[in-house]
Image (cartoon, rainbow, N blue to C red; front, side, top):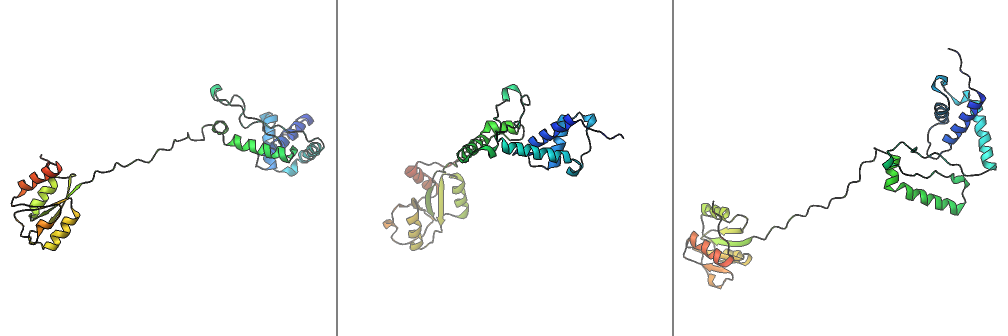
Length: 245
């Protein structure tokens, strides 16, 4: 395969383009990759060469030295091509992205102002969407935490003297309405007193043999009736009726 020789004019263009790529602050790859990128841009594909090492390209290194020297002698701002070329986005999505300015050419105050400008630019959503089209997920509005509805306070009712089956019946009939607390019919007066002290109301049924001065207890009713009587008293006091299916 014949060796490909580039024209001096093409070599000069490669030197200038690779220098431009290499000195761009956003470029972080190797010197050789900068030359390869310049080659792919300047030289037609049929004349591309297999570039394996910078040692094979002394004319590139020499050209960079000349450009560095010229840059030091004439520190004019160098403008770099924006990351998004015009036309790569649909018209309605195109945004104007300012060219970068060489920081080496700026004084202290100008340097601070330029850094601040870039920081503001980098945090602008429109700029970010243009720099990384299709890569940035859409902004998600933070959703407020669900507020759990406060459950209504249940009426606390104590009942003395019901059987286990009667207790379950009452719990089902007043579900989500009443918080029942039951004690045996033969409970001591002290136990009945402690129960009544924590209830909204306490009822003693006809099946209770609880002894003591129950008439002295607050929020307490003593009755000779059974289940129907307790239901009636609950409705009269709290306007709550049992759930019937």
